[in-house]
Length: 179
Image (cartoon, rainbow, N blue to C red; front, side, top):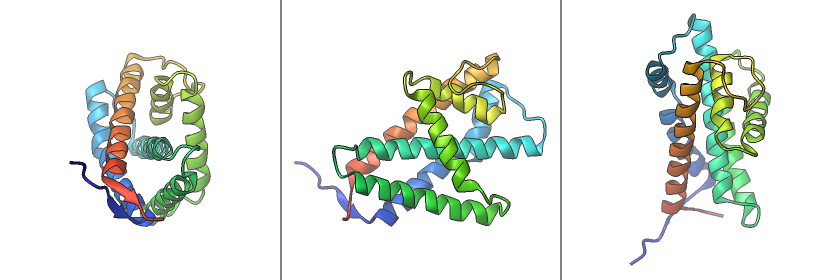
């Protein structure tokens, strides 16, 4: 017997996905990954920049997951609407917490394009791009990081990517979007 997916609005779907994003790409998982890779940030400003980049990476992952569930050949309008709502809610909350983020939408768009470019030919390069961004390394998108810690971080970032995609896929198996 097959269970029917529950109906949920675009706004509610985006809210749930944003909460999932906060759990997977918040400060606690980043600290755990830093500890695992034996990475120490130089100062508080460096840590804040790293966390912001980690959240941007997470947004890319969730948008990627939404796109996987609403490919171009299907009802793309729904996927675009969910992604836009997710990014809008993120921007609203982020600017409340950090009012200095005036260009956040432009930064998010740039990061998403960077990760799409990095992973276009080789999936594992997404982790390399995340390591470079989060750790503040000068590197072309998708190139191998120059330290063992950064390489380890890139492997962890790829595992977070895979785990988050699975969570997004599971969400869309359980819920159907009201249109």
